[in-house]
Length: 340
Image 1 (cartoon, rainbow, N blue to C red):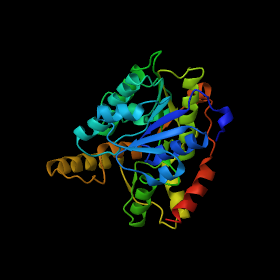
Image 2 (image 1 turned 30 degrees about the vertical axis):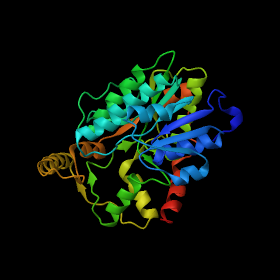
Image 3 (image 1 turned 45 degrees about the horizontal axis):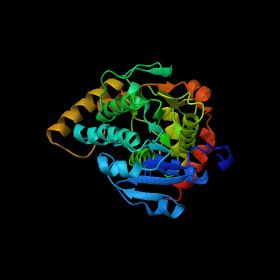
Image 4 (image 1 turned 180 degrees about the vertical axis):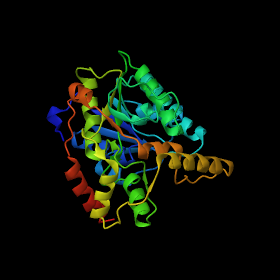
């Protein structure tokens, strides 16, 4: 993935927010391999990360003093921490994803940290319609059907708007991240598949981008190198993926076949799934349910629509190319899943 010799010497110390999460851990691992002194801030202490050589700071990124202390002495901040998901109170998403990002930016300015790489999401441009090879010229979604996407739009605008000669910033938008260690996407798919609860939404021909975890971490390192070097990525956002979309339902069924899980055969129309999602949102909202509905309007659109993006700008500016193919990634992932 890289060596100490080809990494920029301007980056000796790095802070990773959310470094105990799926993406954060992968970035921390690469930084340590590159000889970068790495600090992690998260809500918990991560002994496995400490065992690999990183320093752990326990704290909430939305707390100004905690965040300021964590960023002190750093050459770069990778802001990965976020509250994800498609359900929950707006105040929770706002506190972590918006206020937290605001405090990250402030901590960089106070400590004169010169670089900030932000982990965003393609959801910031998803407007409920098919996206076929869209690039970074796509406008932000005017109105999203989930608080996560809305909060990430605000946060990404803040990060890119903070770009200056004193703080070089950029944002990465990896799509559907998967691979060994995945605590969310694949375990949930497999659990639903085993119970035969998963239903295809729409006509089943929609194409989507996916991003293997090692490729996502690699892209973050490339972004850091750019900010420390030519800085051509300053103030910009980049889509990150495998570079070739997959048929969502074929890919899921291929994974299921490898794991001896029955393939998804039953289906719902997009219209029915959307109405069902809206109904469940209403009922769950009235009941103040904390658990996530099995269907929401946002999820119905995501499962039925095509959404894949061009990575030409990431290739041109960052030198990004996937280092692990979909086939190799699936092989590694299945091996890992079978040990769980």
